[in-house]
Length: 621
Image 1 (cartoon, rainbow, N blue to C red):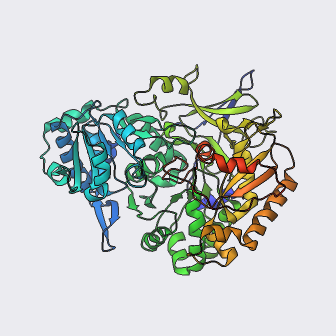
Image 2 (image 1 turned 90 degrees about the vertical axis):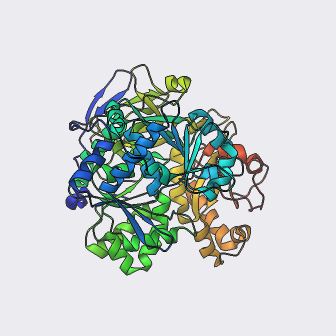
């Protein structure tokens, strides 16, 4: 899929220029020739600015129980955050006694975070799934133990009561919006009743670029989650980098409707920050791209005219059929839209093309697809396609102010980053911090990249993503399997019947794969209703034929020992959050899936000639 750069005529985007030098050892060094403009020392300076310039403009909006939007203006956000800052000062919260937030995205979550940053108290937002969607709260207990909080906030006391009871040890105050049964809590309204004093301004002036704003725990896509330090400089520099590249953000206040969780960098830094930094409005989407909740996202998009839409690929996959089926929704969605932005995984070409076709048919112009490459450790905006031709593997060029070093690691190039938006390290983990940086102080992303055009010494079209380096493995023959590239090709070949794939074969003589099916597409093939058990759906001849036919076509085009699939199994149980197979954002942990399903992997390598194993209903072991 390609989107021509002239599609960006209606949305100002910085030219994706690049300056490249090469070292004798094959290292490629790249940077943007465009300067990074000045940025504030504190992200709350932007709240101060907009509260003065546009006090009555909505900053955040959230659905109430009766389905109406309630709004928080910039002036009210600042007033309430200052009161909370005073309450936090009174409680002597600090870097040693920070705040842990258990709740998902909400107006109150934002106010607690802003109040903390005003007075220089760091906070750590925990994934709500660690409290609500797991049987074993080991990860939550570990996170709280690492942070040693002085205050833990949860908006819905009753909902979070079991998790609070699990972690409460008397060492911290529990603050909620609504009470938690059988647990001593302080209402947030009591903290908001605190009158701010000069102590708040004194504390604010002590906050500088090196002050830790928050600690974000990574999703652990390749290992145990780590607490990534996010400084004020990181947040502010990254938002200026965003506004420099996506220049249309400064032309008019952006309007976003977004579900992405604030405990992740994409939602909590990138998108929340876009609204705050540019005086925009963020509608908190209470849906998410899973069956039973996507309907809420669709309903929200009926009432919000977004100027840019950010999502993970699964969100666009589920949005496309809704747009095709509803002309009024299409007109609403595309009417002011200036860009579509995806991240966290590759987007299937048919989804990207399908949305472009609808855009052209609806508003007479394509909407540019924009993507890039980033990490929690880069706050996250680091490389961006910008106005370049965009493809599903293209990640573009480094953003202004950032230095990219593509360093040889075996026969691959690892992306390494240095700049004002890069973390200084991991919370209370000196060993992990030392391992994360090379001898020149560049952060090692662990991602393999390559010039988009290998024959262009100037790398004028930037870079493409080649997968996670530490996911790759060798077959018993000594041949390397490049998991990222193989997975991308497989997903393209399987199309809509596959949601994701996991590649097996470490130390074996051939590659095998575990396939997580797209339940909706498979049910449609089998003409099966939602109450038909998934094993029966997957055993249907039409579904089985679809997988076999597409795998055979893939193997014909990819016959090499490190690319061809010897056997596959379609899993009838979804990835497990308890086992760390998937994050609440929807990204898959390849290692965890393989470790959690050893019996399935062994089946793949038992004697047999069938390319696709017959589905077997079994819980993960």
